[in-house]
Image 1 (cartoon, rainbow, N blue to C red):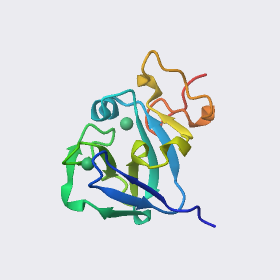
Image 2: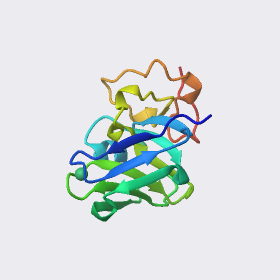
Image 3: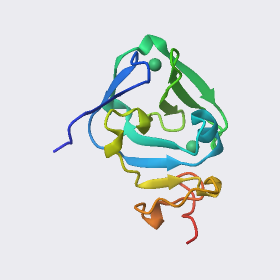
Length: 150
Ligand SMILES: [Zn+2]
Ligand SMILES: [Zn+2]
């Protein structure tokens, strides 16, 4: 049984989307590019199969920034609303079956819980570890790096 689809959209409402199925993982990413892109401590993303994301409205206002500051050097296409600037989707070139959906744009963001922390080495000094994230899912860098020391 798949869970019900979740809806989301940008601040101005021009872009709307639907995600179905289950997340591959839900991550809080402390990397510097995510801090720059969001203007805050981290990027919260629900990582989905691309086939589970349907952009139902506003494709024409989406803009993409080709972020090449990735570990792999392969670009991450950061998609945002050209009208209001909300960060919405990140499409990695390195894994073309996957998309990161900015969890803060989910209509039911209050229900969202991360199960993963990435780039803990860059966690903001005033921020605690997320207590509900299993220590084995707290990575020093990307999800392919070593878990953070306890
Ligand atoms: Zn917008
Ligand atoms: Zn990041």
